[in-house]
Image 1 (tube, rainbow, N blue to C red):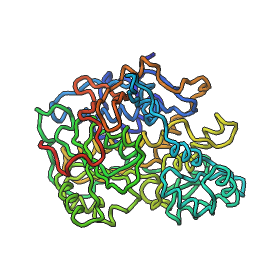
Image 2 (image 1 turned 30 degrees about the vertical axis):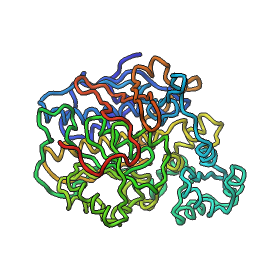
Image 3 (image 1 turned 90 degrees about the vertical axis):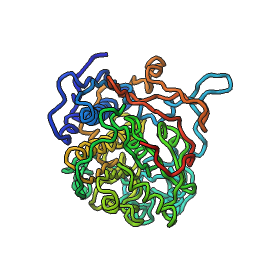
Length: 484
């Protein structure tokens, strides 16, 4: 495979424009390989590799603040693309015979995937309803007044006009979206609202003194001593927090037993973290969460917009509680705008922004189609990690509290700006066995069994990203910080 400068398609350059200071010196960052790994017209690997390279540069900035020196960085496009598989082929479980194999999907997951697809509407457009969590799926079925089968959903969607169904689903606090072309999205009031905004928004929301990184030059990794509260579920938000764990942060996942989860997604985004149960809707447990936040550096949340503010855990709330807080919000539709209070998922973002239309035109004879991977989720997670690292560097240099905002829709449009892959019909869809083994990490004795996973794919010359802890069982840690 050849070696290229990062940013050949523009994503790296766009992300570097958000970073203060001079560009990395020639030769600091190397990107190898090329698309396509998947049967898609999108430059999935190249865009993910650029985002990972940018994240590594931001980690390098913190390393330089600690040590006065910089590291060499390398990312392979094919390996970066494989991270978007979400673990179906990239996390293997050891069987009784000692061999590692992909864990089978549960029938419930297969059923939800079959329903979460674009369906034709009464006005000859397309609508994608989202069913991938049971309670949200029930809300969609209540709007459609149909059974939970592909045939019934198809017939029910066909009775609605697309825009009317989008509004009805949103009013029910369910999730779904009209399938639009890229041009229709940019002409839509929400697409027009997002278009001039950066893909990573970093806003200073409070004042505080400059805050040196904990541990000084003796720290072993860029984020040694940094404490992260991870209040996220299902891919994009957990991936943002995982990005910080890979560079040495103490990441404490906070969830509650009653919240629905998708176990394979929990497994694949919990590496290197700890996990505790706290229900912020209960006063005593909310007080404990506030105590944790008072000693935290980063707070990552992926709830429906403004849900955290309603419980006293919004960005300004925590900036007052802990001056110097870096608060990361991960959602579907971005900051503000007509859809700014709506929840959504990777598939919804693909539908509304034009990705489904492009994928379908190129690979499915014009019928809208989802891409083969969760491209919006993982790209958004990497961008959230990048924004947090940039904000921590700003806090160290000039002080302040910061709100970092990333969204699935902005990630989808970033991907579209990179231009198409012309020939993808013969794309393999997965790494070779040798490529997988080059990055494989084993993790024995987890609650999910003995695992072999595609590990961190960023290479750094002194502090290679890694998972320092075994993949945890949810709720297995006390709600407290490790000593610095």
